[in-house]
Length: 221
Image (cartoon, rainbow, N blue to C red; front, side):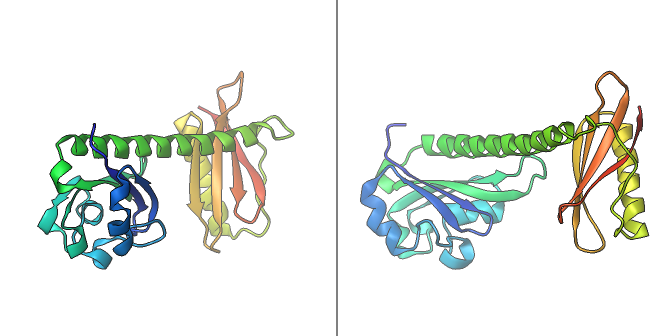
């Protein structure tokens, strides 16, 4: 874009974990107000800023000069964009592009939007990679992924029924899927559904957070 900018990336609580200094002259100003990795820069901490406003308003925001609450930031213009989880839609963080007021231009808005979209794409790739790893682990099982009816002995009846019901619903979907369930004892069960090669059946495997595993009844579509 031809304009030196500094880019911030932080989580939903406002904690910054990346600052890419395209404008080194801003370092002292930013350090003075705690706009650095490891510090919180939410609206509740720093007042109005592009980063904090993007988190609160859940949309792309521009804050210029005297619109900043902190006097030290009034020589700057920032554009912040929220980062949404690709599956849940919740705001998981924000990215902000900052430069001196006299060098600000409309391309900052484009850069912030594209940067947020790039982070969201990577989040989606991470979700897919995690699910694929679970499926691959399922397929490496000694029985080749064929479902057997077995559940951990220490599960209460309600949790057994809940797992069985979830397995039935996964089978009904007729495709590979990964679902997490909270159990009544505080543990979490991860259910992995996988089509059996050469068959119309779906096998379902459950893994608990304490390491226990179980094969749940599968069935045809």
